[in-house]
Length: 310
Image (tube, rainbow, N blue to C red; front, side, top):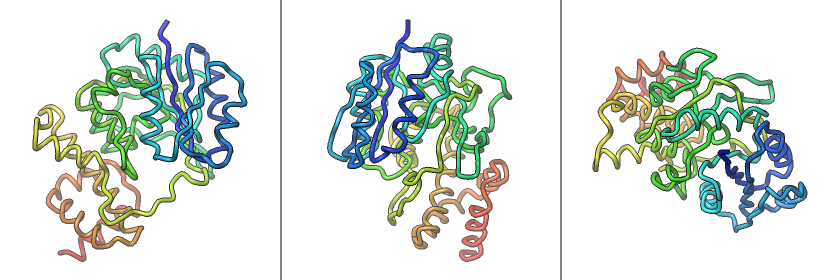
């Protein structure tokens, strides 16, 4: 039977870690190990995880080094070929691992296996706006991963997918020292080399309402790391021609989102510099803007900077 290692990065999530672990223990498939990497927590979250007393749960402690370091440490310690990730403030539905195992059996050459997910906020829950995918119910290889990620919300998240260990080793794992987007960067690097298998079954809940999920101050030079990944590839082996246009659109989506974040953080000069990049691809931006239904704030930012720089 296929087994799975589950990696949970933990940093000061004592109030949520029990929910995450309980959701794993409640799976319809019970062939797994759980590796909780306590990344220097000071709120006793590691002790709460240890208190479950399940022999499949392993607690590893390290000085605070960031979520990428914690996930990479878990990857190194994983004993199974399939490695799933669950953030300490998210949870799985009981069918998650069963769905993932089915995808892995049906698509052994895929680079990642993912399920649909729900987004939970203080106002309720909703499904993500996924684009360029067959309608529900559907399982299979995502036809155009980068187009889907460009025009809608990401089809893959850190709490709704599983990746073979050999793929993680080949692609280098999670980028260290990045303050944002390290997960999207890894999914993108995998999608450049492998097909991504997906099930429209909702297998995970992404909690967007917890206390320390989204508060971040953006430095002047912060940029989504996948944009740098693409630049580096263009200077070396290049982007596969069959996905080049979709990757171009996806990178533009990341730049627009990054520009919005810098405006909100007051980094107006950096936003102007990024606006110059967007202006060079005006036709692609119009397609992206209306095709993806980017939020109103993004549209306001775009039109404001366009007016400022005409």
